[in-house]
Structure formats: C-alpha cells, structure tokens
Image 1 (cartoon, helix red, strand yellow):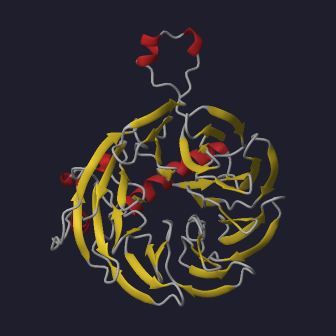
Image 2: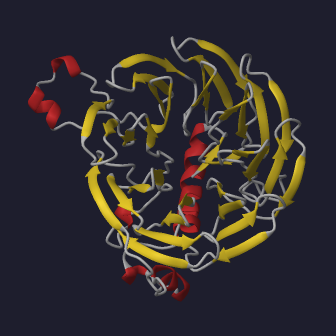
Image 3: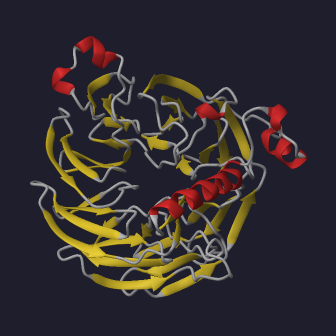
Length: 418
C-alpha cells in the first residue's frame, strides 16, 4: 500500500513491513473468525441487523479472469457506447453487453516469453507473465489501458484490436484521461505524460515531486477547460496545461505534520470531483476541500481524511473516510448532513449514488444500500459469501440504474435496485 523512494534493498524491507501495517489498518481483520484475538475485530466482522426495505436482485453474473487477487488495485469497469469493459489485473480484457453480460470480444495481454514456440496445449496450462493492468478509460471510440508495468495501450473499442502501445518509466496505477485528442497518464514515479490519442506519440512529460514515503495509489487525472486536474503525493491539487504539460496552478490541500515519515503522509490520491466550476478533493492526512477551478483558491476546508473517491448527488457530497465511516456533506459549505459508522473497519468502497440511495461494497463481499437523505442502511446483498477472496474492492458502477459490482476473485455481477 505504501511506496518508498529509497534504495532498493531498504525499500523492499520497509515496503514489506509497511504493507503489513497497512493491511491491518485498512482490512481490519482476517477471513477466519477463529484467528481473532480482539473483541473489537470480532465486532467488525459481525454485521448489525437492519430492517431490509427492499430486496436487490441479481440480473446476471460472469467472471473476468482471476480478478485482482490480494493486490492493491483501483481497476474498475468502464461503461461507454452501450458496452461494459472489464479487466483483470493479470491481463484479461472483455467487452460485455451490459444488459445480459454476454461477451462481445476478449483479449488477453499476459506475456508468454516463448509464445512462438508454445503449442496451444502448453499455453493453456501456462498463465504467462502478468500484464498488471491497473486502469482503463474510454474516448473517441477507443479503450485506453494503463498497467503497473508502465505499458499504455489504445484498443479499438468495437473490436478490441490494438491500435498503439507506449511505455512510460513508472507504474500506471490509475485510469488515464482523454481530452482534446490528448491522453494524460499519471504514474507512481510522480511524472505526468501527454500522448497523442490517435498515434500514441508522446507529446510532453511533466516531472513532479515524490516524497520519501507515499501511499500505493495515485490520483487519476480529470480533463477540464484545456487542463488536466489531479492530486499529488505531496498533498496538492494541480492543473497541468493540456497542450504543453506545464503547471498552470497548484494548491496545497494536505500539509505534512508529525515526526515520522508515516505520520507525514499527505497524499491526495483521489480523482478530483468537478461540479459547477468547483473541484472537490480530499487528502489521506485529513483535509476535504472545495477549490475554485479557475484560480485554485480554496473556498472551504473540513477535517476528513480519505483515499477513496468522493461522489456527489444533487448538493450532497459522499465521503468514505480512512476508517470506513460514511458521510454526507453539503457541497456548498461542507456542513455535515449525516454520518454512518456501523460499517467502520470493513474496508468499505467509495459510495456510488443510484436513485434515492448510495451504495458501497465491503471486504467480505457484502453490498450495502444507504438512504441518501438520512444515511440509514436500508438494504444489503451478500455476493461474496462472507469471504475475503470475494471482497468488493472498488466502488460499484451505476449503469443506467443497474449496479456493476466486481469482486477480488473476478466475479462480475449486475444488480438491480427496485
């Protein structure tokens, strides 16, 4: 979950210990109840009973390879042009009909080193080297894919045919973004790249700062008004000019505080949320801010910390904090409207609005519907069998009122809210 920019040997040891620390912090508990030694952890596992107001129904389900397994990932389905695009980390990419889950095309980008010499039978029993797919985006009839291996690809969205590939020196850990014919790619190394979306030619690179210790994730850029808006590992929200990559403005959201590098983590890893000329963003260290898009001026700040994306419906912002508490706030002034703490510690996903509800998944494969006006949990669906292998690791995707939910082991489920 953490990055460190020190020497490779020290980096590996520190990354391992910190990964173990973060797995405790974010996951909260193990999959086997007998392993628990703390009553608080047992309470996290036990869901409080609710008054079920309706029964969500599964429309269809399918699978996408091996999912993301236990790796940290923000790989989320993409919906565009009446097609649902899904992928697993290892390299399987599919285009599906969102009405029934039927496959339109499939590609596998796992690398087989001696592919030319392998028989069909031997290839069947070899999984190949992982493509480590981390994010997807759609635009101009293309599906763009970024990987932790530094590979950027453009596919024809209708056929799956590869149009171009490029390599960047750094892990692509978030979805790229397309605007005005330029594909913007953010990397874990702190560099931002601009590519010609038609040819794959690199147009520019903007080098950023990287602190000694950062979270594993990075901010996905958003294209707006000739610029690429994104959060940084140094706790800033910044805009890069789309044509040149030059920084137009940057504003500090989170500021380092504390004696240790761990305490001083200020990453803004969330995708900026835009509405009405205002960008809403949040830092891991504990600052939620509304920022004027034109100038970078902070309109208001509140003390909430998160690495999950903010969502919005009407005048309400929905925030899931670092401990899986869920909040609704008035976007105009940041005043808290309600809070829901009964899912604390369950590694809850970002909240996805759907109709009169907001929906989250959790670390044991449960999906929860909250009343958007009150925060009360009004429905629940178990799609993972109370199993961490089938954790819902990324926010459900609202596709025309149906929710597309993906589990860690690659199950893709379409769920309808009555």
